[in-house]
Image (cartoon, rainbow, N blue to C red; front, top):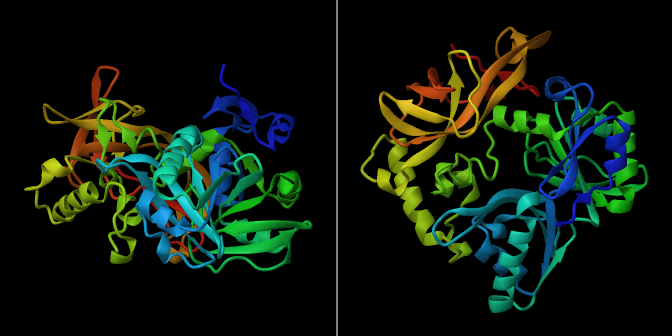
Length: 411
């Protein structure tokens, strides 16, 4: 039987009445007594606190560490100064993703790579094989259990953290910036990153023994614990990919190209300083097709036959992952992620808008669709034997209002 791991925060989840389930090899809270809807809304209006210590955390250092990262990751690790981070992929030679990941540089002489929980073992084996054959001077340490990780997301997060910092300061107010602070006597590495779409977002790293103290002072300051259920609805509303849905293999078992994912263009670099890396040739071909598709030139569509697009259901029903999408009588793809999500209704426009206390529900999804389907096109999703109209849209969430996310409603 495979071992089920528990994060350092496990007893806190149980004490709060969290519903604990197995996820990626870990016992994790799917929700608390308030429920997924309330937790989603609390994050969008306040500060949601997430246990993300199930994510894999590898420290890479030693002679050749940068060259190793340039070889195994798709983004340009050489572009990172100390105090910066970047989204990246662990690619394969055919241009697919073994995993998506985040690379952090808190110190000059080492890098921290965060990977998906379910892929931790696979990623580790992949890295070790390349290290042994090409980069013997590189050190890779699995610090998943030794290094705790939590996420604080939402418009109140910055104010909440500012009141708790004893030494140091928040990272610069730009996404992917990093800093180190002391809170409650514990050294904490802070990153302006997250998986909710919130413009004000932080992820926190600290040694395991300090994790509970940081969790407790954040909760005491007003952060609301949020489970994996709301984490998923928040990322879906923000249009962010989930490995195994928008990356990896599609419902037919076919590999999803990295550039089929909207974030692919931010996760891949062809900079000269990067040199050769795993999957570069295939990704160059995908990128060339992607650039043509953006201009509605479909001559190279076979190199990127489908792309992930946000879709809004216009009729009644819930679009779930795996549901078939049609354009006319022709199958045109699949829903890769979909569910009902809550939202706060808004009064006013742009910077003058404000969230009300009235909430609504809507069905949102991401779909892997034929690449000649464009924003504004109507499609149909097969739900329980019936086809329901849907529209390909630009986004489900707007971040123009300062510090807040607003739901974009269609139909």
